[in-house]
Each structure stands twice: as C-alpha cells, then as structure tokens.
Length: 359
Ligand code: PLP
Image: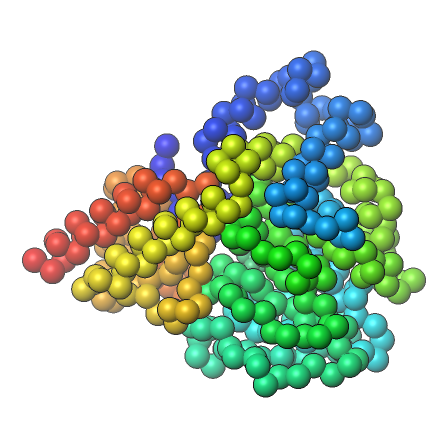
C-alpha cells in the first residue's frame, strides 16, 4: 500500500480495514452486513452503543455530556453551534487561527452577532495569537476555537481563561491525537474522516446544559435536542461510519489508548520537524511553540523544487504530500493511523532529495 499523507479523508489503520473487509457481508455474525441492518434493530443499537461507550471511556467523557453521531460534516457544525447556542442580543466570540475558523465565523455571522476574539491572520496564521488581554463580556454565549489548524499546521496548546463562558472547539484534525480534559469545553466536534473513521459521520460531544437552547424556528435536524432525545437515531444515521468508528476505537484500545497515541504522535512529529529544521533544502514556516502534531507544512527552496520533490516522493510511494492550495509547498499529515515507518520513509526521501539537490 502507498504511504498516504492526506489531510483527509486520511488513511485508516490497515488492521481496521481488514477487519471491516472480513465482516463486510456478515457483521458481528448477524447474518447480514451493517449496511443492510435496520438502524432500529437491536444489532445496530449494539454497534451504536459500543462506539459511544468506547469513546466515552477513552476520552473520559463525564456523564454530564452527550455523544452524538451526526451528518453534514464539521462544516454543518459551523451553523449548528450558533443556531443552538447564540441567543438574540448576545454575541459569540471567535479565535481566528486559520481558514476553518474563518469559515466558522462566517456562518455564525449569518445567525447573529459574532466578533473576533483574537486573530493571527496578519502573520499568515503562522502562529496562534496571544489572547491573555482579551476579556469576554458577560453577554458572550461561547468562544469558538479550532484546536488544530489542518491547513496552516498550528495547534492550540493553552486555553484562554473564559470564566463561565463555554469554549466550543473544532477538533476535526486532532481528536484522539492527545489527551484533553473534556470538562474544559462546552462542545467538542469533529468530522470523523481524519482520526476516527470514514467521512460521513461527525462526532459532537456536548455538555447537557447547552442542549435545548435553540429557538423554536430552528429546523429539527439542526437542533441538538432532537438528536439527544433520539440518541442519534432521529433519522437514519450513517450506520457504516458509526460501525467503523467502533472498530477504530477498539484498535486504539489495543495499542494502549490515547496516552500511547499521544506519545507516538510526539515521536512521529518531532522526527519530521527535526529533519525539516536540520535541512538545507526544507524549512517550516510555523512558530515552534504552536506547531501541529498532525499536519506538518513545509517548503523547499522555491515552487519548482517543491514540485520536483513531490514527484520524487511519489515515485517512492509517498503520496498526498502537496500543501493546501491556499498555502502551497508540502504538507505531511501524520494522523493516528500513520505508522512511524511511514515518517521514516518520508525523512529518507527528503534526505536523498537534498543530496541530489545540493550536489
Ligand atoms: N474543520 C477543520 C479543522 C477541518 O480540518 C475540516 C476539514 O478538513 C473541516 C472543519 C471541515 O470538515 P467537513 O469536510 O467534515 O465539513
């Protein structure tokens, strides 16, 4: 198989794909595939509860939070968050750290009043802005942050002190990559297709007191209360995706859980960052303290050398290394399913390329 550095949908663990393949036509010895089961059947309910309870245990999610499996991607959460949490005459605050937080802000502005809490746009999002001076007014319903910036390659390592204002975080590209304290947040959401499973499922972890605040005009499908009441079975859920999340969670357990993944992710990322920092051809534009563990952008001497490296890497089976079109250069995404050997192969290729280029 190719070594897939895609930012998403990303590689899934080979063991998980093989298990899904072996169960494809007869899931859990039920006599049918998960894709053929009624979502109201006992068998599917077991699959749903299995995924929820494994996630709850793995992330230490307190009983006062609900876990939902929704559709519409993280992008629909950009709208659902303000539709559910932003009260008339109140405001929402947004920490702007990249393209995804800008998109989230845009959707909030369609629903109500939203303001920028702090932004690093003027330095091209190469760092997380400092926010210690920015107090939140009491009519702020939430502060939205993007925990990991997939395109720019930064991550938030320190949370602002918001007092009683809940923090809502988009963890689409970092969920389960390192240990977090769920109670620091009012809402955590993530599209599944990077660290959790296939695209088509979005996980939402929401504190109970934030449920049931949507206005009467909110369509039922966009109201968290609807999905909480029906335990994610209000309508037909993405059944195959939920099943796959269960398998990915079992795989993580078999490795030793989040703490083990966190250690591995630090090792993988440091190995690549060190290679970039020591290189005479490649460099990282990102402020060291704010560097992402999951998405590592880097550039070479000029765009022609970037493209020569991308061809060279591809010839060695290292694919999806092209940087996002808005940033250019290269980007290596090292999600949980990326083995250490994948990063070793990339670093080897960089060193070989460097030798050829400098010679
Ligand atoms: N937020 C972040 C941080 C992302 O990385 C992405 C996708 O890459 C999104 C939101 C959008 O996710 P979706 O495609 O599930 O709507």
